[in-house]
Length: 611
Image (cartoon, rainbow, N blue to C red; front, top):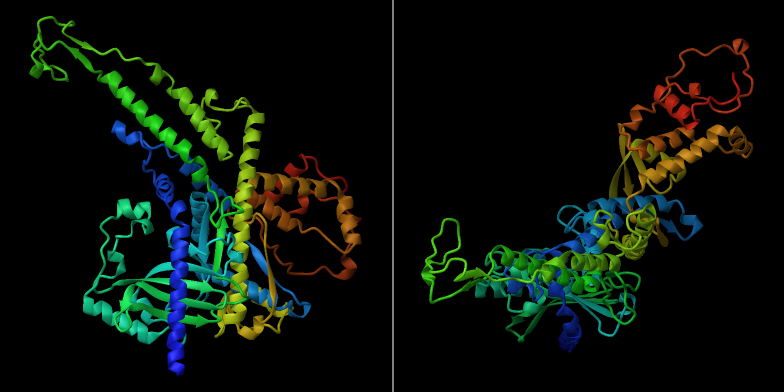
């Protein structure tokens, strides 16, 4: 009876998830129809209706360039943030958790490195409007144990219908193509290895190349797959299997929609995992371009600029066709006075006719269409740049706004572009924060064996001096290791991402800011005295180092070096007390470069006072 109940439960779950998949697939049917055009624009392929009639293939990649550049600016460098234990008694565990997060970021490299994945996540969200990512816990054959981030192709994502936010969804289905070798290495405590073995036998008996050889379902293939790789074939020795996984908050179910078990004429159920995740969360995070309040998939830059991009492409190709007509115009031919077979276009050709320049004449073409190309192109280009919040000051004045190319115009353009970048940055940072929150929760819940973190000696000494209770340490030359165990990080954390940390820093503005600080300190000695009175000080060496680095100078460590130790100390009775100093002077520094920098910051005027 128990076995029958278990079978009934499995079959009931299978029926539920199949119904969920069919409903989501139908739900996305309309929006999916427009994805081909968006994907084509990303790879500079024409899909407008006019260009093919001209036999020209000119594509102006203005919109994709805007998107590529925005993604590069917004996701220019690795994000920075910290996990904070909620209890003050666990504050010592913050350091170890943050070391683990750095370790994960360096090693979570499925698909690509984390920096590339985050940039792709942002880029494709601007194409489709929304891009989803999976945040699982991984134990792979390369020795990495920890959380991951997988960017999910939009056509393989099936959100719960009528739920417009992932946080509100009860389930989310993801489609994958996996190898039998991958399936056979799954955790037997979670996956049904008997079903996987039967599936492998089924593929071998059928001598099947796997599900990747089946390209009959056109809607699941991207424009790139359909046009650039239309002849994809399977591999009998290494067949791929299409699986669907429904991620619920309390259960994960994985089945094979195309592979049918002959024993029961139903798909194979490869996994039913209870309590597979943590914190009552789905392992799915969405990155939106412009979220819509009534749709799980937002509105992207490509959808907003699609009609303008197609108009620009059509205009270019119509113009090129018009240029052809001006170079090779149609001819008026009097068939009664001309030998038709002698009419051949080319240098040195002989035409046989009775009345030259009368029996054959070129068609007079109205050039007004060609004459309006520049103004029309300028208007379209200006419109597409305006909707993207950017423009180019290098173009001619008639394609730009009424502000022209004045300093005020350039400032206005930078402010618009910065505001649009700021919007995208905020959306990306919210998504990255959700990823890190899941990484932290997974670490606390799933971390099993200890993790060895390799650090520099001074980092280890800092940890040991501040929080010796959370780590075990040993030194090896200039490097060392921290052995992290689950008990060392068992706490509840909040994660805070540093705002703007992914954006490429403005080095010029940073240097100007540091210059202002240095000038204020060097020219106003009371600042230092006031800080000293409160038991504080300004680290001038660090300020100078940052000032040099922000200016683009390399090898700053060769400019700012440790002071040589004094070999002999002057006896106390021979020491002469110096009068109190008033200010900082160039000669206070041994390095000539720093002396020159201080003199430059002080306007070439030495500080008042003396020894």
